[in-house]
Image (tube, rainbow, N blue to C red; front, side, top):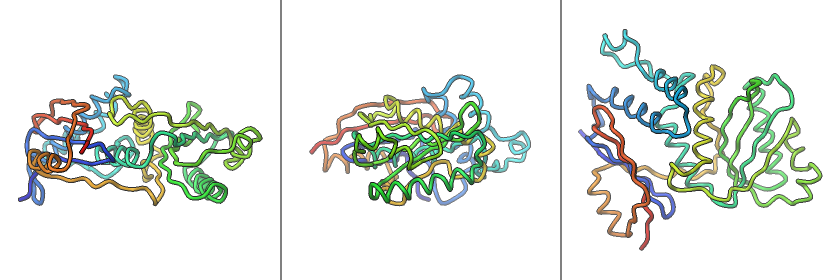
Length: 278
């Protein structure tokens, strides 16, 4: 049976390492596997500095199985549902953001003027906006999250590798009118920290993701929106010592950040970020 105690993802000159205190087994039923996964997800939430105490309480409560499921010793219902941003969804989003977006790219917020907007209507509006943007500015990558304003209306936060927009088009409303359904806020990304705990933009977008999944209107919807041309960095699983030795054969890894927290049945999870030089 295959097992691993480490996962690594290389993003440019950065290496992200997730190390487990105990090995995780694949290809068979592990009596502790499901509880281990759940414990790891809860630990990630508790360590997230972007969440308030109340938000942490709500999100961790959602992950707990029912008493009936515990007594029966059965797998809890893990079908994607409102209220639960899974650990795999979170990691996939972070890897896409880190691999595809950097300094100089754009952060755009699209807001509706009207109050009532269904999720299906919003999806069509966003697709049409992307089409019109590409017609004017050419192809581009995007990664978007949805969230709900206090008044309950959905809006979009979009990372995009757009070229610089002419000042004249920003001033005369040409850029805003491509959306045409409300306000448009455009910001330039000045810095994206590879150390996740220092990346304010990523923490804010993850918070929006969790809040979106916690809303019943997210049922059956993808947690985030992405263009088809995004590069997906591969995740490699294996033995920590073996993988790090392979890395050291090609690079000189410099530890930038390390963070360990206790997780039931895994002993701990340690998150490490390295800068790679040759």
